[in-house]
Amino acid sequence: MIVYPCAKINLGLRIIGKRRDGFHNLETFFFPTQLTDILEVVEAQETTLNTYGLEPGCSMADNLCVKAYELMRKEYSLPPVEIHLYKRIPVGAGLGGGSADASFMIIALNKLFSLDLSQDEMVKVAAALGSDCPFFIYASELDTAAGEGLYATGRGDKLERMTVPQLKGLKIVLTFPPVFVSTAEAYRGVKPYKSQIRLKETLLCSVEEWKSTLVNDFEKSVFKKYPLIESYKNQLYDKGAIYASMSGSGSALFGLFVGDQ
Image 1: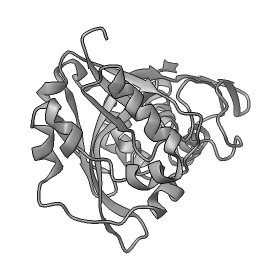
Image 2: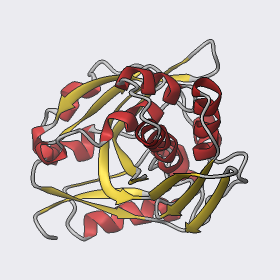
Image 3: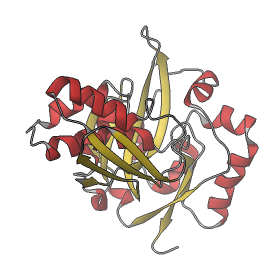
């Protein structure tokens, strides 16, 4: 069974408040990209993980694919599997690569062993692995050509389909500064606040307005500590992007371009 876990970008990311459970409430718009990892899962005599491409940045026990399998194994008495993961999404880039791998692992196991799990049942498993994991259960069925993504609140796990028509026809260009930014580090640098204008309203304005209105709250402190990342953002604008931003907690950035630029 082969699946293609996709990277995501965040169009806007606001940190609204600190929760009692230690997480933060946020507001963002998740949108899939064409950059994917490649994940193959086959039944085997013992469970193994083979990685290729970019370094996964963790041990087998800490790999989210393995953690997803272990949750599914315990719940549905699954046999051992051989996992082949070709990493093309950089680690620590704010693109959700690990979360995507975990969620697509759930999808692959559901198909491989004919579990007939509903989407809601898969989302429940995904939510136990990470706040943004549920998004990736839905990602492959979104009409991205029309600008469809998921508006997220709560920890990023409360999802609502939303279409941003302005994205239609735009090209997403990703760029990767040689800097690693941990999520914990990024959160330490932000001060939660509530804006009077909801992110939804901002997204429905023209893309040309986004440069001054559509904000990723992580950028201020991350750029201060890592000015190289901000310089990569400026380079995207220099190349003609109509909007550019850091994705998630960084360090990857994306630019939206018209046509084939």
